[in-house]
Image 1 (cartoon, rainbow, N blue to C red):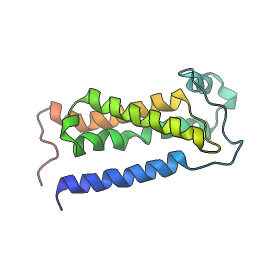
Image 2 (cartoon, rainbow, N blue to C red):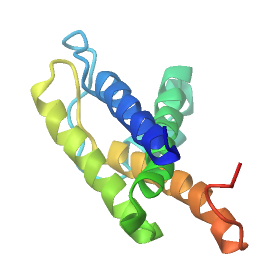
Image 3 (cartoon, rainbow, N blue to C red):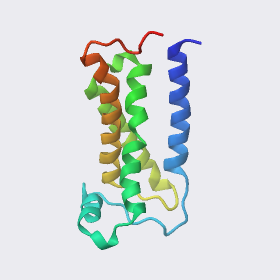
Image 4 (cartoon, rainbow, N blue to C red):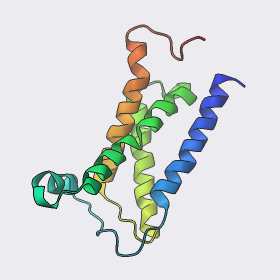
Amino acid sequence: MSRRCVYIVLLAVYAVALSVITLRAQHPGTGASATWVPLTGIWHLLTESEGNTYLDVGSVVGNIVLFVPLGWLLPMVWPQLQSLRRVVVLVAACSIAIELAQFAVPGRTPTTDDVLLNTVGGLIGAIMFFAPLTVGLRYPPES
């Protein structure tokens, strides 16, 4: 099996896991209302020290970490995405699609903060992919 096939399988497994994590129904009433003002939830988390819980901080970190693999796998699978800008735009589009789909899922609340955090995660993954290229290393490394 070629390396590209392995990365395609990894991307498919990741897409299924991402769908299960982000589109699984939750108990009604567990989510807040949809928030469309960017950075509102993050600002609230940073300024309301007594209300912060590990769950809140974990949600912020989780939204970033969840999209790191996407930012790394997309240019690995599709050579035409060999641009940081293209990868970040595609990651943001995927995140927006997920947030829009969450309208139909009970207990899920779409927010612009999730899109921003997901996009940051994809950017981190893309930087991890492109960083070796900027110092002249071949990617993927030959084995």
